[in-house]
Every structure is written in C-alpha cells, then in structure tokens.
Image (cartoon, rainbow, N blue to C red; front, side, top):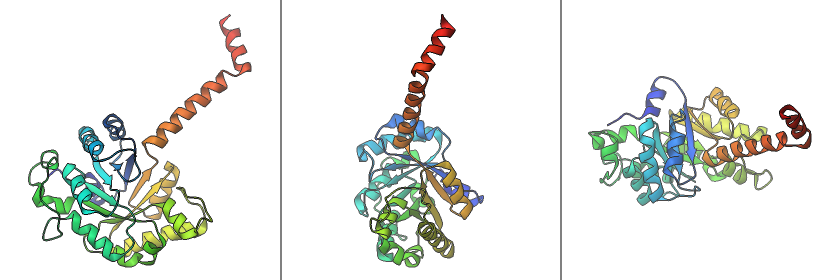
Amino acid sequence: MIPNPVRQLWAQGKPALNGWCSIGNPFTAEIMAAQGYDSVTIDVQHGALDYNSALPMMQAMRASGVAPMVRVPWLEPGIIMKMLDAGAYGVICPMVNTARQAAEFVSYMRYPPGGQRSFGPTRVSFAAGSNYAGCANGEILAFAMIETRQGMDNLAEIAATPGLDGLYVGPADLTLSLEGGRLPPGFDREEPEMIERLHEILAACQNAGIRAALHCGTPEYAARAIGWGFDMTTVSGDSRLLAAAAGASVAKFRTLLSRDSVSVVHEGVY
C-alpha cells in the first residue's frame, strides 16, 4: 500500500498542512491538490457535494500525491466505509461527544480484528497499491471532531480511545456550543477563554499520545497553532479562497478605475 504522506511527516517530527474542498468538482479538487498541501479534505458534511462528487475528486487528487481525506456527514457506518472504499486516507467525523461514540467511529475505520469495517475496497484497492487489506489499519487516519460542550466534558476519555489517531477542532461550532450565542461562530479565536479551550484539547491529545488538528482561517493563525503544538492545521478552503481572490481582484479594478485613476491613465495614453 502507498504510505500515508501525513503519517510520514509526523514520523519525521514535522506538522501537516491540510487543504479543504467544499465545491463538488474534480477540477477544483485537482487545483487544490496541486498547490503543495500535505492532505486535502473533501467536506461531505457541509460542502456542496455528495459521494458521487467525492469519488472523482479523489481520483483528480491522485496525481499530486496528497493524502485525500473526507469529512463525513455524521457518525454513520455506511458513508464512512464507502468513503474509505473510494480512496480516503483519512476520515474526520463530526460531533463526537462521548468515548462510546469515538470507539464506534474507530470500529468503522478498521478491518477486523481492529474494528468492524466491511471488506470491499472498490476503488482504493487500485488507487492505494498492493496489500491494501494488510496495511490499511495502520495507514488510514481517524479524526474525531471536538466541537461541543459535551465533547469537552468527555475530552480525556475521547482522546484515550484505542485506535483513534487524533482530535480535529471545529472552532466555529465549539464557540457556539460553549458560549451559548454570546460569541459569533468563526475561526481564529482570540478570546482568552477560547484559546484556553484549544490548549485543553491540545493537552488532552498529547497526554493520550494522539495528534491534534485545528481548522483555521488564515496562515498566520495556523502557524501560531503549530507553534502551540498542533500537528495539523487547515487553512481556509476552496470556496473562501476563491471568494477572497475574486473580491481582491474586483476591488483592485474598481480602485484603478476610479475617477482620478482614469484621468491619470488617459493622460499617459494621450
């Protein structure tokens, strides 16, 4: 089986940079995968896409050698196993709130005796190379999302789940759940109480010997999180990056085409 590049980075003591795809299009996924990320996650939970979009997106990513990952819609065995069979090298499961749910999630990720994953690697047996069944349990990444008050209350027990590779922090939902609407949802939290929560999650991961990942909005905040000790950061995503680049381009054009700028351009031409 082709090794998981994220695991290889971690074995070298290096952090991983994760990209994010919410647009259900293979070309978009291909472009994202070619930009130098270590992994790219297809968001089937909130993204504008489904399984029929996710599979060709993973095919489009293959040439770049990134680790294709998927955020599934929920803790449900059917979709988790189908995404693995389609070629996902990692799965992020949302709203994991208890150790029992974390153990259930892990069981869907691993072939027996490590779990109850059903055997039928439709695409991944071709995409991942030989001996997939013998290697998958040790290569595929299982991330449980911590994004609720209940998840925080059960943090240590969740982190200690055998077979779980890491916790993935969803700061927007976590802020909503912990602060009860007092603070708006969003990434890159600067509130002292929220930064304290992030450090609590990081400490729980380190104590359990698993990895910590954080969804960020900017490269600056992502680098800061790596400095704290996070092992993986996600920076923005395809839809936000597209909107930001398009918005900046339009704003620049409008500025250049303002009345004073037009007169200067005309003077230079005529």
